[in-house]
Image (cartoon, rainbow, N blue to C red; front, side, top):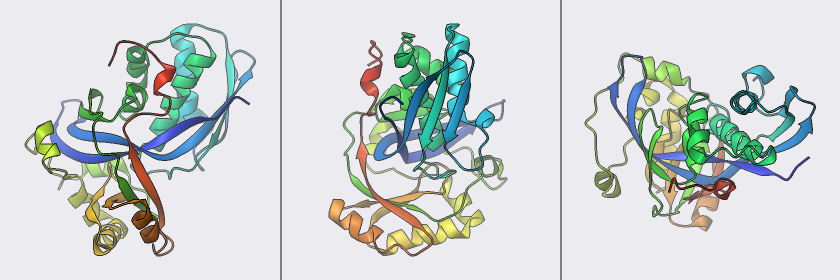
Length: 284
């Protein structure tokens, strides 16, 4: 197999629902930052037309896996004759709101674009990525970013603090479609500016609905807040929650006390995707 290709998780440091489109999708404002927790993907050449995946998320069939769909997308767009075996060492929880499947898909596009010598630009890969999922483009964009639209219109925010966080998964999986379809969800929050976010407007407007529907997440957020951590928040539509720690040691100490069966990690924010330099163009 080839060398390891990381697929990092992301946090939504802020998320606001500011409208709903005629096609049913919601207009968002959000801030993405990568963290140093990741899946690892490996790629091995197979005969043309053969695409297989091993490892990966339990219960997700190969044909439904975003990495397989990403590889197929590259073959369709490039008209090359290649095959690939994709192995995923899965560390990121499924349905966690940290972009695990989307990140795996983006890493597949980045790696195979290099391994197959396709030469697609970052902009072209991002256009392919959005057809796979709204969170895929930011992992191809390669930097922490302000996002609008469904999350695909991105502006780089390279100077965000690369802070330490406690990331907690309370052992439930959130159905994102359910949250966005919830009748009690407020869909018309007033838009904010980047300056307002930097001044401390960091609310996730999905959180109230998620707390009501998922008591385990409600308890997890309260638990994080009770540890003296700052700004405990939901990322995406959940189920993962996170809170700012003062330093790495403090984060690790709190992770060691997380009650079972919850899972937790001490993580650090990262403003640059580890595979950023696989694609060089004038986007930035």
